[in-house]
Image (cartoon, rainbow, N blue to C red; front, side):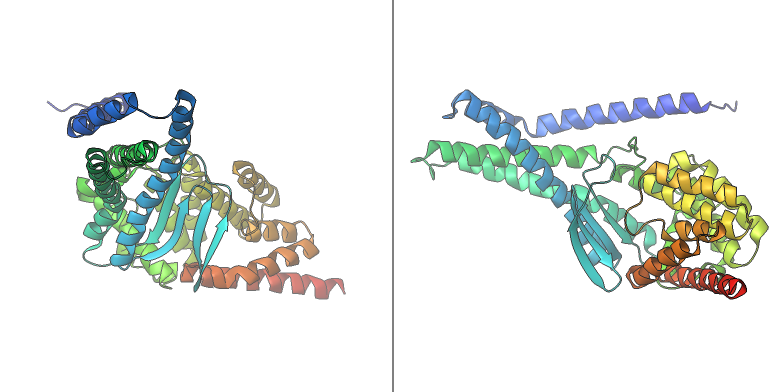
Length: 397
C-alpha cells in the first residue's frame, strides 16, 4: 500500500534521524577517547595552576583552538580543491578573508558572514569524475580535523607520560592540555560536520552536501548539472551557449533545498541571454519566491538582478526601487556590491550623474570578477547603460 507524508512529518523524521546520528557519533567519540579523557581528568586534579589561572587558560585556549581548528578545517577543503584542480576562489576564517580577484589574491580583514566561522569557495572542474571530486572536496575539511586531532591527542598522551618537562610542571601542564583541547575539539568538530544539517543562515554542513551526492537519481543529476554550469560559466561560456539538455536537468527533482532557488536562477540566465524574456521573467519570479531557502549573499544577488530586470526589461521603475530597497535591507551593500542595480535605478529615475558614478565603479572592478561569463555579460550591460545615458545627454543638449 502506497503512503504519503506531509512536510512536517518529514521534517520531524529528519530531525529525529539527525539527533540519533549525533548521539551515536557522540558516544563513539567518547569511547574512542576515554583513555585521553581519564588522563585529562588526572592532569586537572594535579594542576600546578591556581583556580583562576586554570579557567583563564581554558577560556583563552578554547577560543584560540576554535579558530585554529577552523583554519585547519577550511585548509583541508582548500587543499582538496587545489589537488583536484578546482578553481579556488575564497578562504575565510573568522575575520580573515583571502579572496581571488581575477589573476591576483587579496588578503584583508572584514566582518564575518552570518554566524559561520569559516568557509572555502571553489569552482569544480567539470568532467566525468565530478561526483567523486565533489565528495573528496566536501570531506577534505572533516579528514583534516580528524587527522590533526588524532595526532594532537597522541602527542599529548606521549608528552604526559614523559619526563621531558619535569623541571617545569606548569609548562608541561599547559602544553599537554593544549594538545588535548585541540585534539578533542578537532575530532568532535570533524565528526559533527558529518551530520547533515542546515544552519539558520542557510549554510549546509559538509555531511549535508555528501548526503546529497550519495542519494543518486534525478536529484544527483540536477546537482551535477548546477556544478557543471557553474564550471563552464567561470571558464567563459556565456549562458546562451550552455548545453540545453543540462539546463533542462536543473528543474528536475526539486527537494526544498537552496538548489531549487539556484536552479531557477540559472535557468533565468539561460533564457535571458537567449532573449526569451517571458521565460526569463517566469524563472526569475520562481527564484525570488524561493529566497528564504538560500543565504543572505545569494538573496541580495537575486534582488539586485530583479532590480536590473525591472528597470531595463519591464521598465517598472517603482518595482525596481522596491527590489533595490529589499537588497539593501537583507544586508548593507559593501563597496563592491549592488553597483549595477544602483546604476540602473539611478538612470531610470533621471539621476544620470549617480548612474555614471556607479557604472564607472563597476567598470573598475570587471577585471576582478572570477566568473568570465559574468564578466562578459556585465561589460555588455555597462555598455548598454552608458549608451542610454549618452543618448539622453545628446537629447538634452
